[in-house]
Structure formats: structure tokens, C-alpha cells
Image (cartoon, rainbow, N blue to C red; front, side, top):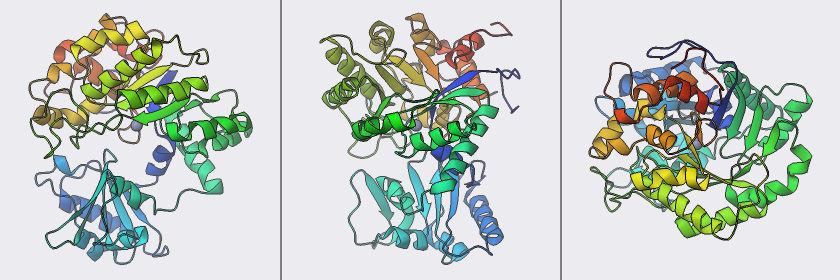
Length: 440
Ligand SMILES: [Zn+2]
């Protein structure tokens, strides 16, 4: 899939997508795409067109959009509840932000969610209200998830369809192995059904939420197949860069009030207990850690649990992998290779996060994705350093991550931490490709 700014038109045959959300990718493929809207009016017009073309479907059917990037608009204001209501009437609608940490909903969607203006916000979430208490339609973090949970989940044959569609698309991008980083309890059985029907296009590793790991492990014999495997549990140590909830060692230049360094969602002690839980089952742990404080907490936790002996995980499974690691303090870089912790990163996010990084961390841009230092300190691309996309949050074109790792920015745009660039061959190797036909 050629696109503007690609560093290479060579499509490698066999790759690993180390961080994907298979079900969300399949569902997002069926949603209205809003990534490239120029402004709020453009966004509303596209919603109106989608609503018009859905006029002959039942009015209770949801209209779902994804990819809203209000931060990039001249007026960075999300569409409002009133604007959506005037377009959609009784049809429930929600539009995800590109990073899936916020959405805007209309009145019908909020009614389906069962939330009323006087209700308290959920923990770790917020329904943004206008002065006087009316909903604006914007729901953040856990509140966004609460709205989305009112959308009917795929059932029965639709599950097969969603998962098949996602894996077929990833296979078209060259991926023969896909790691799912927050697996639904029904994903394993669905993959087994696809395998048994001869329709599974990629090997899949599953990482269900750590809280469900024992329960999922009890059923694994029923659905594990050659190429479908339970690999470990997933835990969140912090939030995201764009929402200023990634947990940092130093304050943001533009923090959320009362959260100068973002938000710790799991400290080293909590991570260590999760590690011991996963290792007790012979499985690994994948921790979402974007800020450098979250990354350090992961490494501290692993080092402490390590002190009592090597974890007895199944061969070929990493005992610990840190997901995202967008900022890493210089003192922590060598700890990855020394401890055998996998850095599972998505350089493609750099292409979207440049403005947020320049605003929030103007004096620490050299700590963003320090790929050169990681490789230099012994993280072998493809072994200790893995690339993925986090699809559907960012599209899964591997050329995007290769471009970001090599050029450290968009074509013709500013470069972030240019000294941390790696070679094109190293970047493809981080996707699991053994050698480059182009050299580097
Ligand atoms: Zn993810």
C-alpha cells in the first residue's frame, strides 16, 4: 500500500505485528473514517452523509465513527451533542477520537448508555459538561468506554466475520504473526473456529487483561491451536501522551491541572504482583507504559521479581514486554537488554504525536523513542526490540513505522530526536524480517 512519505516501496513478505487490537481493527473497518477531516464542519458533513445513506436502516442502529483528531483542527473543538442531535435525531451515534481515549456521543447514545446529567462520573473518566451541568457529548477515558459498552458487541457469526476481516487486512499488509494486546474472552475460541475452517491467515498471540488471565488460562486447552496461543496478561501502568496522562519523571510543559507528571495507573509493586501472577501460570506480562516514569516502574518491578530467580515462562514467550515506551530515561535504556525485557514500540505514532510532543515535552524530545540507544545497548531488532502499530489507533502500514524510525518525522516536516534514528534494515528487522533486500 503505497502512500505519501514512505521510505520504501518494498513490501516484505513475512512480518510480525507486535501490537494490535484485532477485534477493534475489524470493527473499525466497518466504521465511518474521520481521520482526515479538515475541521469540525467537515466532520459534521461526513456524519450527515453517513446518516443519510443509512436512512433505510432501523433508527436504533448505531452510527459509529472513528479517527476524530480535533487537536489538529484550526478550532480544536469536538462536535457537540446539539450538533449531532440535529443531524441524527433518534439514531445513537458515537465518534471515537483517533487515540480511542475520548469520544463524542449524541443524546440517543447517552440515553442508551443510561447516564444522566446529575450522575457522578465513573472512576478514571469524565462526561464533560457545560456550565449548568448539561452534557456536551464529549466523554473521556472510562466515560468513553462506558458509552461504547452500550453499542451491541459482535455476536455469533459476526464475531467470525470481524476477526476474519481484521486478520485478512493485516495479512494484506504482510503480517503473518499478530499479537493482540487486550484480548476479549471470546477471541481465542473465534480464532480456533477460523483455524479449524482453514481460514486463519496469521498466527496470533493473545494477551487478555491480567485480571482475567487465570480464567482464560483455564479454557486455553479448548481453543489453543498451532498458531493460536495464550502468551500472557496485559496491564496498564499509565495513560496517553495526547491526554497528558502518560506518567512522567518530569512535569509536562502543558499539564492537566493537579496532574503535573500525568497519571500512575499501576506502581512498581502492583506491576510486580501482576508479573508474579502471570509467571505463576508460565506466561508473560505486557505492560502499557508510555511515560518514562511508567517505564521505570516496569523495569524496577521486573528487577525485583527477578531477584528471586528466573521466571519459568514457556520457551519463546517474553517474561515481560513494555508496550509503547514512548519516553525512556537514559539511565533506563541499558536495563532492557540487561534484564531481557522486550521493548515493544510503535514508531508510527511519532508521525501523529509530533505537535503534542513539542507542546508537552519541548526540552526532552531527545528521550522520545530512543531507538538508536536501545539497539546500541544490545536490544536486537526483532528479538529485544519489536515494532507494531497499535491498530486501529494508527493504521497498520509497516512502512509508516519504518519511515518514523529512520526519518524521525513526517516527510518534509520537523524531526524529533534525530540522533535516535536507526537504519531501514534495522527497522524492518524489528518487524521480524531477517534481511533487507535493499541494504542500509
Ligand atoms: Zn494498544
